Length: 273
Length: 253
Picture 1 (cartoon, one colour):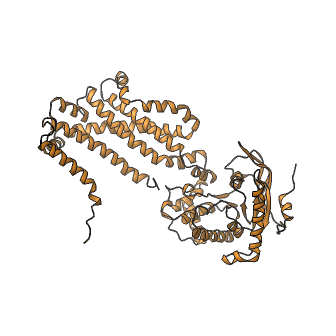
Picture 2 (picture 1 turned 90 degrees about the horizontal axis):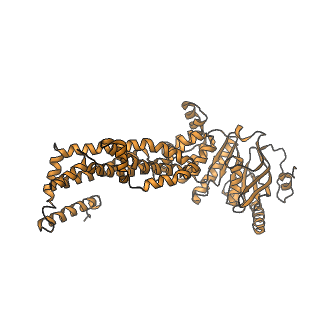
Picture 3 (picture 1 turned 135 degrees about the vertical axis):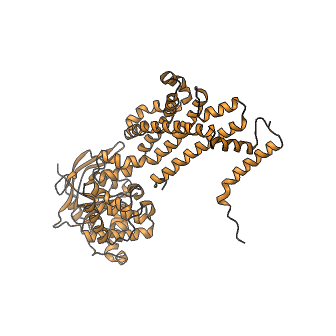
């Protein structure tokens, strides 16, 4: 049974969430996932629009990370269908950035070889790997000594290396699981703008799981607000402020309004539990 | 006035202290001089023994046996440890057996190995290899099993096959723990080799040297052989630490 599309429901919200002319990069239909102690998703539907940055926000433990882990095949699903441009996961190039960069990077490889690694898995010859890596580093304007080992870099630099490792394959879609939550505030602000710059420059469809509402709204074209378990779409809010956004954006009327709306939805969902 | 930095010299203090106490004990005859020769006599025996005497030869024999035992142990235990560690179910099914034999004193195996290999070098080396192998096996399996999940997922999400995850991530992840196993293994191998040299019809080796010196009441020679054994153990440990620092530069970081 096809249920009402979440996008349509979202349109009824007070904040504009229209989807006119958007082509979905990812379609999730009838997704069901049970953990031994709880049903996390029950016939869940979602469209992730192409070329947009979608933030996922919701109550603790509602399954934000689980969602992107299922989409990327890290966790098996119990039922449902997930398609990338109508194709299954294995025909799709995607990048994934973990929260814990310390444990996600390979400490036995230099930063440059970490970035190289996914290209090595694609069996590209060394010369081509180096060219691609260097081209990407240059286009991002990254100023890190990439001949160092990860443990010789700061937390922010390590996470930037992780992001580059995810981007070097030129993915159709990039997933980030709370990528900045292990960084201090100063570094978080810096990394937000790095991510925004990367998004503007590459236009890669991006899905960001965040536990910080300000960050979620600041970076997003769409904010996906999830309910408590079993997770459903509480709202799918649109935020259209021009890029690049800056500190000034944070005090603009539109930003404040969208953030307040998201907070209201979030609080409502939290109280339901 | 600038204070003198003592920190780098602190380890020497213990050595000097020990020698001083030793001297005093000999000087005031607190211990029977027959049982405790002076430090000078002992170090002279050590020097003469190493430079041209029997002790140098025995030292090399013990070193050979220990290294050989450790190499055999590593060659068997590392691949097995990886196989065990990469499958939790396999590991759990043999965990008790491994743990049981790891806890069994290897010296209790001497009679069995004597029956199997006779009184030659084979027995000494194989008992030592047996003991060391179980220690190494346990550590390697532990290292593989405790590979950071995120790192394995990272490789998987980038499209690495199961074999690539094993060779590119798990093996390297387990290296620090493997070296812990190797260091413990080589120490245990040395203990077993020295004991075997004492009691299993040996004609050379540090264990035999210590035992023989004691039988002949050549106390300076006995102490010299003990120090040589200590130096060997310390040196082997240090060597593995240096190799580890070279190969596993990320360890503990």
